[in-house]
Image (cartoon, rainbow, N blue to C red; front, side, top):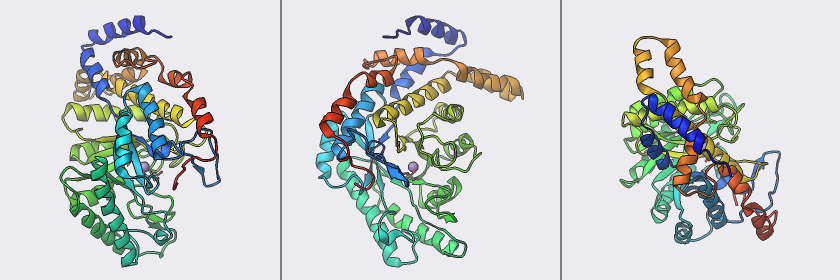
Length: 408
Ligand code: PSV
Ligand code: MN
């Protein structure tokens, strides 16, 4: 088994010389928590087909079992986001108890007001009052379910939009959204937070009612303090500066949560950090700056990925490790040097402070943290899971083709 002791000592000496408090960095790494999505474990695919995976979980309980594996090897993923009705069917008390028995908990609840035929022209943005009322009722029902599950985040994403110019009255739809969201907001209990997610297109291809972070922010601001914006990394047009959006929302106290994933083209749902690790790191440099300034409390960090070909648990672990790496690198940025360079308009020195931390191999640091958390393979969680035999044991136990996919 790889032992990073010697590398750790070298790194520790270098960082200490730079004035970085390594004990504090390690303590912060141990508090990192990332939620994984129930829908990331079940069978899924693209609109061109679903490839059934051997050992895919057959119900919400088995999704928790798989999620517990991702947590076992990384130590940072103790909660699971649910999608309702995709995960409905069992008694919610049993779901919550079962999660607890695995050392896990239920995280955000994601209502679904997009898949039923009634919603084909929209939910809160529908022209039909009875459809809007049905959507509000489902969202409010989810708030009640959250109380049973011990969940505090109602995570809202709407597929609402139109496909052709002229199809909808854009301002009326905006007003219907404001009304519907306000009805749901009024039903929040003090410990509940409403997260509002945005997306520029898909499934609607002409306009989407909550298309970007600014629209989500405008709705949240009108609603009140318990409404915050959720940033899904896949939900931006090419070239958007996501770290700037993150910094802006942090400063406004309205950054509610993340859906981590990665994209090459659009909402690709690829493994976090797989295509553009530098972007992920730059997002984390803003988050750490926000933490340092006391602005980053209560953010719900979640993964939103729907893998199609890799083993789902292995890919989730890859994503979690990428998030640990990004956080670790952002924590070792020499902040005083960066601040001094910014003050002096020394662009090269400022950029070098950012690049130096990114270029650092933080695996020895993560090895140390994971060793202290007594994880099974502190040097390499992906390898630890691969060698555990869990995937083949579940393939034998669960078979292929019975997996609970989206909508199951
Ligand atoms: C929509 O693309 C989205 O990002 C929303 O968060 C949904 O809840 C999730 O994906 C469903 O896969
Ligand atoms: Mn999402």
